Image (cartoon, rainbow, N blue to C red; front, side, top):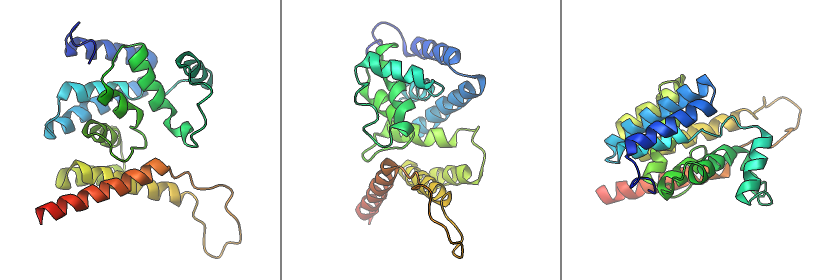
Length: 220
């Protein structure tokens, strides 16, 4: 990571933490702190660098509360204004993309593993790196997330491991998105809009299930 030579990881995390504190509301900052600590906890269990996991957690939502105008300005400065919007799921991905851009351009973090994890933390992607898996799950299981579905992923993580937790998070997210568009069988109506089920989350689920099946096959 560029900056490692210039300063310790501890100092870098402190700098990023202060940047996040200034950019985010109190509630969003608490969430980011929770994700950073949860990522560090999961990363330690997975044998990953704890500080790197904590750094990714603190960075992941730094653009979460940007206005449309701020996003537009960021795309313009990055030279991608004409490309934004070509992906039908850009509205879901944009705060992760923006956070990765800010981390690279403004905070001068060049570790591609960290940047990739930040970019894909909302939806996941097939082939997600181990750090990406950690951040994807930590964003869902940090202590501030309250509800049965969050507890379910925590249980799967504890009993079956990280890849199983990735798969379960994707499954629950897909079911939740689909359920918003279900209607009673006897109701005569049409769907006003397609369900906002993200194709990347579906691809992540298929990939994770394939990886789990492969692991079972190797053990068997």
